[in-house]
Image (cartoon, rainbow, N blue to C red; front, side, top):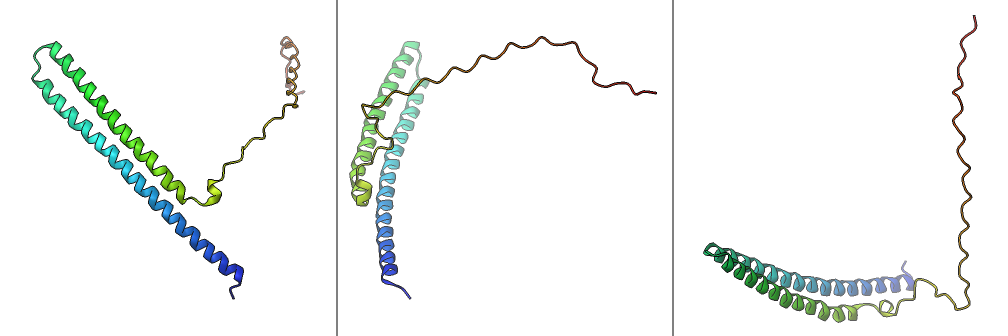
Amino acid sequence: MATGKDIKLAVDMEETLAQMQKIQKANADFVQKLAAGQMELVNELIDGTMKHFDALKDVKKPQDMVELQNQYFSESAKKITTKGRKIFEIYMSSQPAIAALMPAAEKAPAKPAVKTVSKKATPPKPAAKPAAKPAAKPAAAAKPTATAPKK
């Protein structure tokens, strides 16, 4: 038979699960927007590359090719910068929405993982130097290890 504690635990678990599902949905929406922005950038870069190659087919002078290359790289850099900023804005705008869904315990500032050293602390003692190894002994003349059997 379920006790009051069991019922409360079940209710708490349901609430936690519902909250986790909200967080997962918000996160999935964020990832979808992020992926869409990245795919848009990739498609624009591919289109620009294809147009650039088409234009290079008609080039007669090396100077014209260099000019086309500079134009291509300049346009690509602008696209990357513009889309990169939009993707970053998507990221930044999603964070408060996801953070708002986090439980209160998750929002509390984290305690430092390492204790801070007080001003009265003494510095650690330097490690003792290892003892010098004794000099290697010169190799002795080889001694026979086995003796011949006696007859």
